[in-house]
Length: 468
Image (cartoon, rainbow, N blue to C red):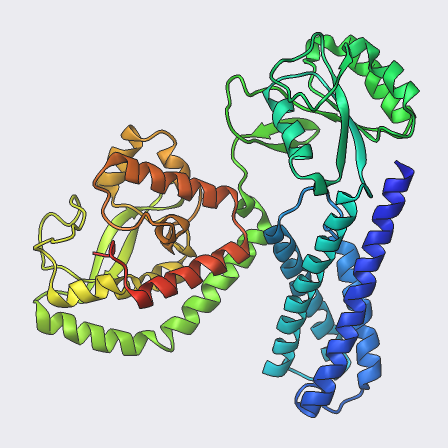
């Protein structure tokens, strides 16, 4: 255990040291290439500025931590972590440097510096992670673990630990009342739960973690194992067995000192994530509404009016976050009709105008929804909002349909860029859309939003078959 902790500290030091070296190299590169456009003459010299930025970065990184040494971590988690750290670093360093009369408002070159450093930081961590995996594949930095109890959760845990040899786990075996036939033949049966302490005593130094799934009714067996682990520097983890009625992932939360298992992980319930997403929505909406939108409105509005009588905008009541209703705006793409609140648009819908056909195909009809985003009814990315009648119908037909309303609806979404856009002729199509909406809510990251926006723009430029 001590060796693992010492190794992790060395890893974190090496990562931070490498970050600082890259920061100073990039800082020097920008000074040489951009001169006063990057570092204007002021009361603080570039060398002092480099020291101040280094200290700011070190403080921010020590505050947010380093995640590379964790046994199981995905690349998108690394990217998200670096992005958060970059925001904190940029805010802190720009504030302190501005106080030092370095420069008033950050220039575009300064913003470019932080963006490039963020990208370099991500690449450095991915390369570092790659070599760490090679080291673990050869047997280094591995944690010895034993499992106590055998059920579906423990089987899945075993596979998480062992399917990827580079995760850094070495599972010595498992304890249960009897050998569990569903376990892999690769894992050794070590005995019954009352034999755990004797095994740990015989293998001191080899076991760093114990994962126990015994029911609370067997506390007379669990408590001695906990006490032994805590007195011998072994990490003890309790694995709840709820798979008999919940066949899905869950997330642990604390309400006061009471542990609670949540069946939905919602990153957007965290204040910092909501602030980040809302800030992005507001900035992008303002930029679009006050730059491109007036020209688009004049051109598209004139075309709509010339093509068919009626208003330029079409508005409709739709279901939003937590089931709240709101007016959703679009460029009108159909002739005025009484069925707009009950019927979906179909491929050869006679209600569509010639202009409407084009703006639906290119998604231009959705652009007025940036007004909804600015008002706070919608987000740029999220589950697409449905008309009220469809929400009512599908809530009866599809299990967990209303879960998609845990987040703000979006102009575009994960389901739409994953092939579930357009008319839902069959129930399975809506079920697929709902599954992807729920996945988005449970796995939200800012990087995922950027990826969805990129895919949406790409699809709009190519033209989508299902956009009608």
